[in-house]
Amino acid sequence: MHKGEQDANILAVLTEPLNAVICVNDWIAVSLMNWLKTKGFRILKEIGIVEFDASDFCRVMDPALTSVRQNAEAIGHWAAELVLNLLQEKVVETGNQTVPCEIVVRESVKI
Image 1: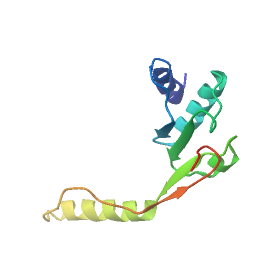
Image 2: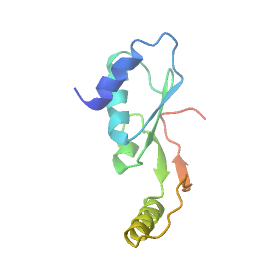
Image 3: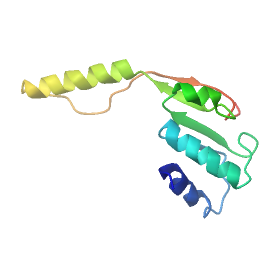
Image 4: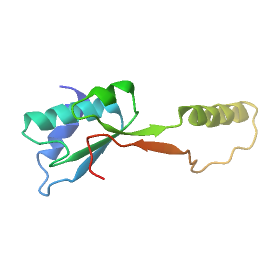
């Protein structure tokens, strides 16, 4: 059983219906979508799915998955700068880092 299917089993014990699920990556979203379909759910009509990754295969899923496309270059630049500062024993500010992202709306959610 794939991790997404294991996580989806949690949905089976919920007492309140969900409007949507946000998945941490596309593999979990695809597994969840397949699990929901086997349980008779209609994606978009009964539940929406959004995922973080925005890989190419999300466009060809049925329905196509709505994605949050993160700026990997900006995240990598920030992380590399942090590591270099640590290696140089510079004082490093901790806290939250905001990185712009883009929502790619496809067929798996209603807006």
